[in-house]
Length: 309
Image (cartoon, rainbow, N blue to C red; front, side):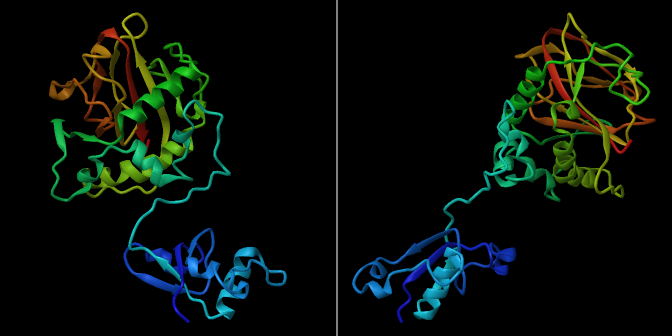
């Protein structure tokens, strides 16, 4: 019988584990979810009509069984892309920006929305990562949309720490170098952020700090800091409790705020005018004693992770 059935999506086929490495049209015994039926099947003898009934089988299984019995072939085709299906059953609508929390369940769209368009270039072996100060590396990682959504999430939560040494969120209740901040676990984003560190920060770290591998990376301190002239304008010199630290700029210097930046005291070198969505990555202990430079106007937001404490 002529080939009259064409299929666009098949989730039960093991071939899909390498689906986009192999291109073609594939004859398969079973399909579900999305399919196209040639119009000739819907004309003429009702006996040839597609049927979704066959004993106690589910409709999709019954359809495929009936087609096979009639000698009608079924195919999948990956020569063209028409988008993709997502599972909306687990979509949580309780957040300010619900898509921000979809890194597990809809990672493809999450990356398109939140990962910087030039991030993949950083992983190219021939790409040289910028180094504004000795052993301080700088590269694009997230989009302006990510930065805005994260700031919105934190400001909507609103419970910024008071900047004192007393901090009940920490084991022991004491912060040696306090900032005005909100921790990721306070907004239900801690596990999502740890996944982000593994998927998007760790590969760059392994390229930069050759020979150091820790998979998955650990981070007990993940938080957004807010600097304001009338609140906390700067941060005194300190070491981070980390093997390495990332510092992501969440808003724009000389537009959203003035001043700010990070000064590495041992090298008398400052990283200022940090680009939106770019991260600084530097060693935490021993060598990179640093301070947060004074913000003179506006509000500066940064995302900090102390990785592998």
